[in-house]
Amino acid sequence: MTKPLHDRRSLVKWAAACSSYLWMEKWLGGEVRAAGKGDQAARILFVYHPDGVFLEQWQPKSLEGDFTDWPESILPLKRWRDQLVILRQLNLLDGQGDGHDESARLLLTGARDARPGSIDVHLAESFRQPLLHVGVLANKAQGHSVSFNQGGAEKVADDSPLAVYQRLFAQARAVSTTLDRDVLRSVQGELQAFLAKLDSEKDRLKLEQHLRQIQILSSSDQTCAAYDLSPYPYQERMKWEDKSAPVILRMQMRNLVEALSCGLSRVATLQISRHTSPLKMDYDWLENYNNTYPMESHQASHNSGEIHAQQKKWFNAQLGYLFKLLAERPEPDPERQGAMLDHTLVVVVTEIAQGASHTRRDMPFYIVGGAGLDRYTTGRILNCQGAPHTQLLWSLSSLMGASPQGAYADAGSLEGLLS
Image (tube, rainbow, N blue to C red; front, top):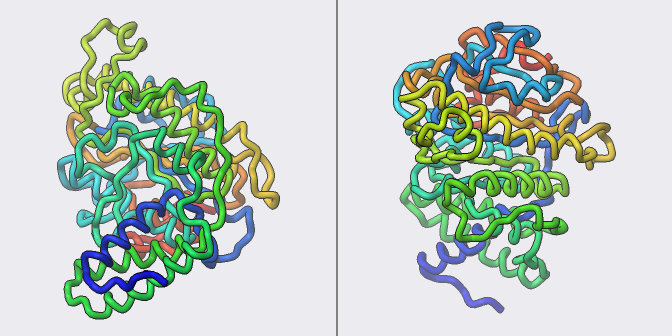
């Protein structure tokens, strides 16, 4: 028999220990709304890059329809035009406000206050699966996440691609035996009893989150096979080195594609650096560009439109590796046809539109993937006509077959995105 847990400290310690395994597990047993396979995306991946863009070298001249021009920063996307939707005239909420911090909270929550939680968390919980949340130099300073639990607590991205790999693919499952599951259920019962005695709303929210995690974790029953690490020359000392960002990014993208492919989750978030980013991208392209001393991302967003445009071109070029992995991998769901990319939505976002002005209007968002879905048309520019981005969050939830939640629950659909 397990020893009873009587005091608050022991209970919280148990809950935290259990929830630490959560994101690496596949949670089964939840009911997901049934619908035609062609009407819903199989999976969604949110990709964040920091500090806005140089809009003059990002946004096409056309507000809608076909692609007629490819500004410098989005040239790498031309290869993926048949899977691409560029959003024009979409505002971050009402387009008002200033500052990176508030904008980062708004991005996936739709609220200036993060307590309603973010869409990635909502979707993962609705499918009773883990949110795969990884970073690239995203967690060197705390307080810069773009993902939030209900209640407003940050979900911190794991910046170590090796640690992510080991948890997802290489280590023995932490909770696998019948005895382990019995222990979890016992702890769950004691936490529920303790919850009934709590008066603090803040404590209740935290404990309810742990309870949801334990409930889902206890039904887990699958892991993924490891892949070959030799193409990725990564060592743990490289985790927060600017010059290591390319290999870290590639390894994290591979981690996510492998995990999504084998069904560990349907929802993932890849956070590349953080707002007001100190990342110096002094890679070959910058040395060849103008032999200019490498600027930090945030510095470049204010001081040099041309260098910032090249930084954003680099980001889009790197994401080509992600799109390629998804395009080359056959769709694992036997009821669907084509490649993973045909049934996956990769939603690429940043927290402000123009770095120098901090504007939140005409956000430089785009989506890659989903060409195999019946009610979603790719290969176009969509004029959002000044709509709030909460309508995009609402529509993405709908396209995933989930009920919109939180601050965007009543936003309604983004006109023209879905048919």
